[in-house]
Length: 292
Image (cartoon, rainbow, N blue to C red; front, side, top):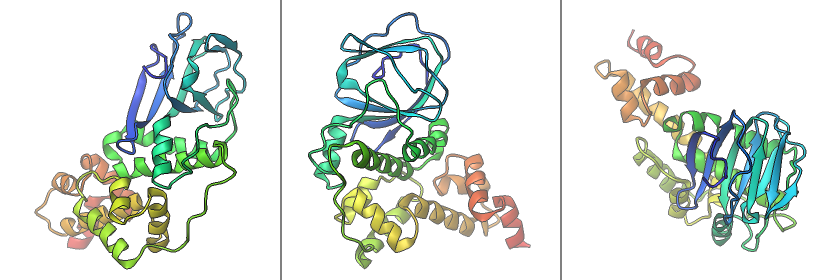
């Protein structure tokens, strides 16, 4: 395992930004490891949000002992996996993580999302930071990790992009990210993006595909789409799914499970929860009021 915790069950994982190698994962190690783990050496970073206090463990970088500090619940740590890291855990360990291959940072630079020359993420080895933005972004992934089949690819891509840009801006070796020109999408770009999402209402669609269709970087596309529509792409797609579901609900001969499937929801239960959040009532109650 890339994180070097063979006794820590991965509660769930979900990919981020197809083709980049980035991945969200939740790790929970309730029992103590027996000794020092096998050293990990990968060309990647691991961003970890502590969900519970874990202060009684040792960290080794290239065989050098490091006493960790500040691993309280709510703190965020950056692990440079190129440092040949190993751990000796004596406390239970529970964290939400984003695994970021170094090539993913470079790929985002190639697309213009972050500066190409970002090579490092500044951090204290064995230390943590109180970072409310990283905390909230990682916490927002808990539902996606618990029920990945219910979360659209666009949402996972959006969270990965937002977190990576935040990391580059606050921990990268640049003063600040270059400002991209303002303004929303051109009419043809907005039309093209919406057509793609309508055509993919019952299937997966990535942020990269949408951005490329508009000849924009993912960062620029996301900001311009929100400015044009008032919603992030994944939010707009969710509303379109609900709109489509309402059209089908108006036809009394279509079952709720069939509507859920046609509108891209994981199952009827997922459909009911998503519909209720947006419409304020369950699909069954909404249908009864419309057919009354």
